[in-house]
Image 1 (cartoon, rainbow, N blue to C red):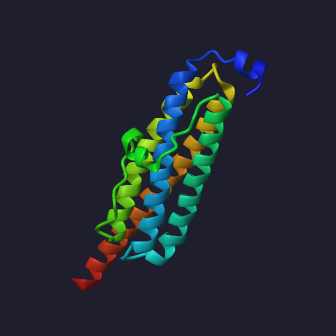
Image 2: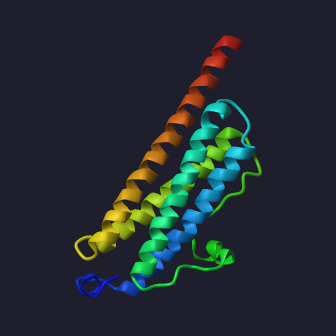
Length: 170
């Protein structure tokens, strides 16, 4: 980051870099959770949901690119070892040991809600102090909110399908 760009920051860069590294670890875990979940998922609407989960996975990977770029611009060092991801992440990874579509979606929903909170905190911390990071955080926050909405809609659709199926069986 250039001298003037650094001089105008009115923020604790060390704390911000820590927050961004935590978010970076969470993005890598979210990427894998979406990716592997989409591959092993079973159940209703799987063929419709799988490609969307892969899109979500790629968006999480893009978030990681944005975050690592910002960490480096701020003069920080990104988390270098994947074994540290779970240690620094507040948003946990849940292995899809039960591959049923609703279980996988609920795991991803939990992760999205955690990510929404993470990026709200970063946006609030940088608001009026670091415009570049604030803009990045709000952009990611918007995508995470869209992911949450997508998952909620799929879960609603599956619940309605189950209710209709029960009506037919009666």
